[in-house]
Length: 405
Image (tube, rainbow, N blue to C red; front, side, top):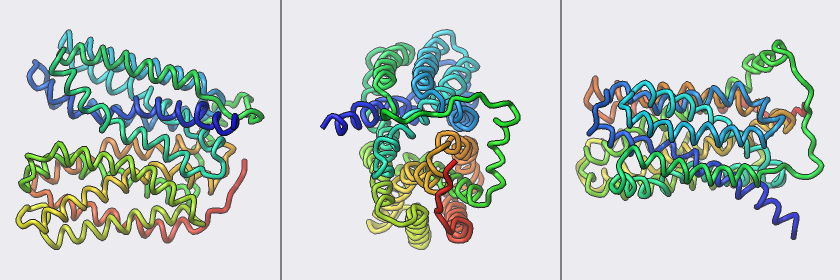
């Protein structure tokens, strides 16, 4: 019983506390709407979220080895950086500085995001060794559900105390959650990490994994799924308004947020039942292609009859679920291919795809819509990209032979 309890108190609960805090990065659109009434350059502030995701991916890519050696220290630094970023953003609001918003919300908080995202993943996989997919699904489901949980709280605080003090209060709440998660997080007894120092040459040698065809394939699939997901998710509220569902857009965004979290948990649980976790990505991509094609053929994003509206909502549900499922299955697929030895480091390097996607997904969609005035043209882009990812999944990732380091 104690061993079972430890799985939850030392892995699952702290992972949820950490990820449910840092996952609120996706609440930026709620904050940004409040900036509009203040003296800020909104074009400059538009990069705050993109920078946060970029530094999330890059800090994970370069600090995966650090997380491997000391998850406890990594989770503490993540807690401090994330909450300093949030509170610092409140200070930036007070003095009216766009540069400080980018520094605190984009760079410092983004740095904490990367360490906070990686810290609990390997721990979960070690505790739940027979259900690794379910374990990682639990963690990233918290990341996906954070927006759904905190959106109404943030909106309530904004109406009650304003933008600046909302950041201070939320920073305190998220600090407590993350600090408790940091204190609880612990790897199983008997698991000893290698603590030998590595040279600068050895550190950069780890990036030679980009010459591995299977890793390139996994990286590209992950990048494409995020880019296409962000291209649609970033436009979600606008799409609902354009097709005549603006009055229920808040409810629909909550439902799609639930699917985002559910996809992280559901697809990872499915992966535990399959011989190859690459099959999960095939299922995700093919379902996304199918619903995107149906939406294109029916003109679903142009509004119209009830059937078209149903298809439009169904598409966004499928994309949100697949977007979440892509995240939860990444570490388990990598562990199947490369073993558990250096999974945090390899997972971190793979998350560089998230960094690049954070700079491209939203911007590509904005560009297409601004140039063509049609959300349907975004679907043409995404269905082509999903098709490319599907081909990669079939052609480049043929085996899941474990390579222990």
